[in-house]
Length: 465
Image 1: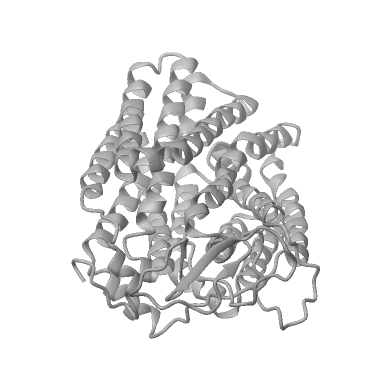
Image 2 (image 1 turned 120 degrees about the vertical axis):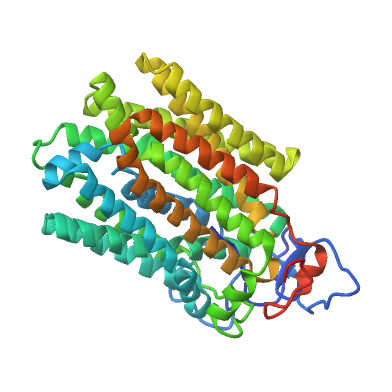
């Protein structure tokens, strides 16, 4: 989850309207400041509503002049993408029966899908080289192709390949979308705008995943698992048209120098970066060891049916929405480290609730509510902290963070079925141990100082470089 690069330089708008003064210093945006040791560009005015990527080039599409409209389209697209990603978990038994495979085989599919996240740092370069919009359209196109293929050729091998292809599309779309917002919104306002797009994660579980369950429940049992794919393909096509029509294209103003592997190697020498990546692995694995099996656990323990599992998904979605909203309200006020600590404590306490109060459906759902609330609060609060550990290469740091979140999910997905065979208690113990590991690593994550804004080509005054 990364926002990097700036829009192309352009003259100030001719029409009189309210603007916010933005200065360009070495490719980074600093509102209302002008330190003497930084070089000021002649161009310093940018309308926060939109930044035309290239005013000299004739625009083919009617690009939207409203940032609000652009963010709305992009957020809706992410809801579609997250629905595809998240619908597998609560309906794991439905996909298992429909595909004729067991839980362990589906776990392998989800593990490989998570491991695809390691390609994120390399796929992110497409957005910088060819433009944010190009990368978003290519990524969304892959998702449409994947879901359509699964629908037309329903089989386990095609399902496996389709999920891998759709994950590639995700990895192309999301960093490009975040970089697009970073190009057009000042840093002091960017967290709010990016936070709005992050609400799509919870919105998928609140609205669209239960809708998928409703559609499945009204389909033939043998074909229920296939129902979501044509719906997602159609919705994705609509989003692709809207992005092509209403969203402008732009590239990073900061030109990449050297190769990506060398840059990554230099960053891995920074203690805060290493600790942050380890933190990402730990907290996402803690979430996944519960997330993968909660639907099966609810069905086994309380004999919940398909529609009830969809309702449980909505409750979890509401908890995640609350975590995202609380992070937006409190992370800056409390401080990122304090907010993250509170989130970890909430998740840890929730595991005890799941164990001691799981005798009833209400107790189990309450525990799940606070578990997901704490995790989402932790995750969203950690993003701005990670974005500042090495500002000179913010895009690469965030792409690596995405990769490590994926690694954590893969680790959790591998452990979850094995632990569940021993008993759900072992899933909870593993979650607590991973949360404790994340807390230890948090103590070693520190935002970079102001001098790091002058870092060029991986050179920095940051301790540990």
